[in-house]
Image 1 (tube, one colour):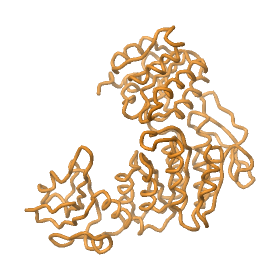
Image 2 (cartoon, rainbow, N blue to C red):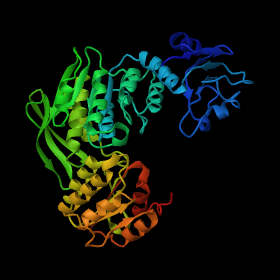
Image 3 (tube, rainbow, N blue to C red):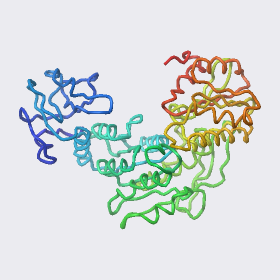
Image 4 (cartoon, rainbow, N blue to C red):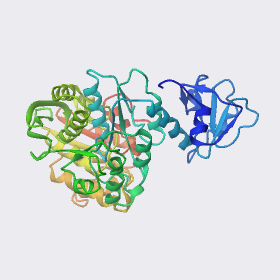
Length: 459
């Protein structure tokens, strides 16, 4: 945290009530398993937990408390508020207001974490960026990133996720980005939004959250590019990226090497810069374009952008290639899945030599057409000539049926992980590439670990 804050500052700015006086703090904790006697503890309330059940025992284990009701019998200073999650964001906002460097925010249905890591690689060459850790990209995680700001940081890179219509607007009100990008819009978390159009509208709040003088990075190849152009706030600069030469930053002469990594010419302000990515899949060209534009808008030179993008070698759980059991090649793309990202994975796998197996866990939160979307994935896997599709979960039945021509061929659909792993093991040899993918709820990383010989996939 940059400097320190006090409960009195928070109460004067945002209201609420002080109990047992004020206290200064420079650290914040939200997890009773990670208590710190030098930190302010924020008692969060979720669907299945309420930290207030434990705060009465925190004397001597925290400097003070943020609560939505007074903790009687506790001598610690308390800031009582209506909503402790909102209060968490308000503390984050005060931390953000102390930061004077450029702030970049990325959202999108697919690839936003990869874009974030690309930006980190670009800026880390000559700067000290503060970057969203892991998937801390929601109303709980983004404030934690802001608490991590320190005097040494000179750029802030925020990943913003959304499960509902107003999530991005809320995160922008705390993070206050100056450069913003929507990487893409695809069917993901449809249940929380109702439609893909609603997803585009919600993601677009990252643009309407910009102040005058801010820069909006637009993926001109996305179906919703025109929608965002028509709703851009006055005084916000736009910088478009894509595969067409009309864009300010574009890619041309794309060629995949033998490993499936894209090389291309990155064109910035009319000048061409050869670039070879170390990340699998042609879809990473668009990720690189968005990252390049964000960095360019923040003042980074084209040469540094190319060097940074060239240096990134992988993001955990996202198309990481390793040697697995029986000599098979295992591509771990298990971090998450939606129809768009699964389609990109199928295209990558289809370009491989030898036997090609897709292992797919159910894609979650797709709404009423979830079965149809799984069926489409099965059709695509068959059309692209994959040798086998193994699925895990009830929705995978639709994908397996489509892949096997309506059940005329044997189905490889499983409801439990262990039988799936056992069946897969018999299919593997040194001429086989297996790609593992699925939504977080499917826990497909356990399948990937088993195929790499790290476990037997226990939960």
